[in-house]
Amino acid sequence: MPPWLQWFSGRDVIGSFFGAAWKTCSGLHLVPTAANGQPAFAVYEFPAVDKRWNAHSIHVLTLENEMISKMTLFLQPGLFKDFGLPQFLPQDAIGGACGPA
Image (tube, rainbow, N blue to C red; front, side, top):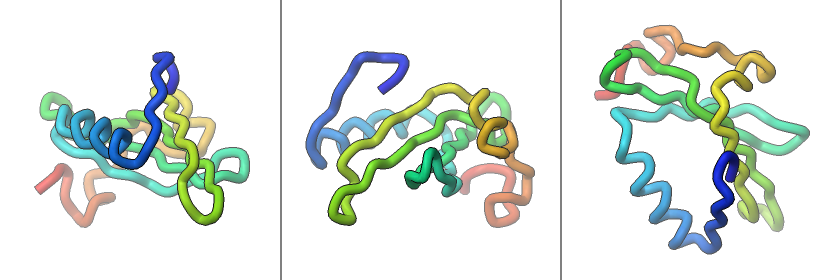
């Protein structure tokens, strides 16, 4: 998982990691996309300071037998431009709200 050399294996371990990591922000929104023919998600974060949805990371999924076998995260908001995605989501992009409920 760039930029760290960490590996998480197994549904429970990965679930625990994301459960803890995603609590550190005020909200996350996933936008479906693709990377090299693989399903992916662009993740936008809603930090309390900025009060807007900011580009955060790209999560690329590798599927085997209709299940996620690998997930690679790119914590580089600059990549959003390469995916044709905005750095910031418009205020009305998330159900008419500019932030999480």
